[in-house]
Length: 178
Image (cartoon, rainbow, N blue to C red; front, top):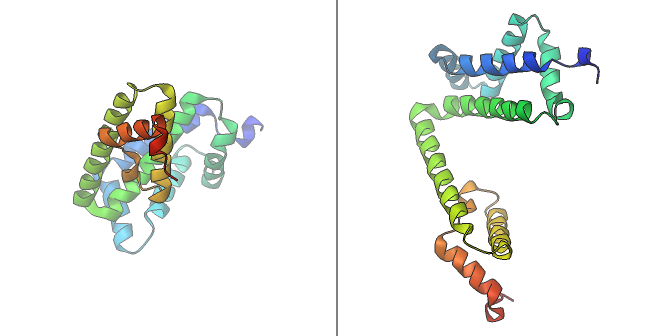
């Protein structure tokens, strides 16, 4: 892909930084929330904000949005840029969720998410005590649990007892479920 068909890394980083700054501002948060109150899609407002940033940069907004859709292909080998891109996508999702849920429910959701991440981290630390084959069996159990729960993130955690049970079942053929 020719450079003229794609934004430069510097332009993309400027967009990501400017978007993060703007969506953290109270007036912009209110703008997104007001749109949601008026039955508009929050993502329509965040997209409009991105278009405004492209205009500020002297870039045709349609071209800029098209480039965002091509980042994965164009910059797939640039790990740092890809991390920043996924942070940008996460920021957009968070801005939309905050507008849709309101500040109190959003704060509650963030706290629940943080608790879940802490549980996952503790689970992963505990898993290190097991042999690699046992770790694989535990991860397979989590995968099955996630599939059954239609990928609800709450299903991504096993208790110490559940992990020990997975290992016992793997070791003892009597425990093999039919």
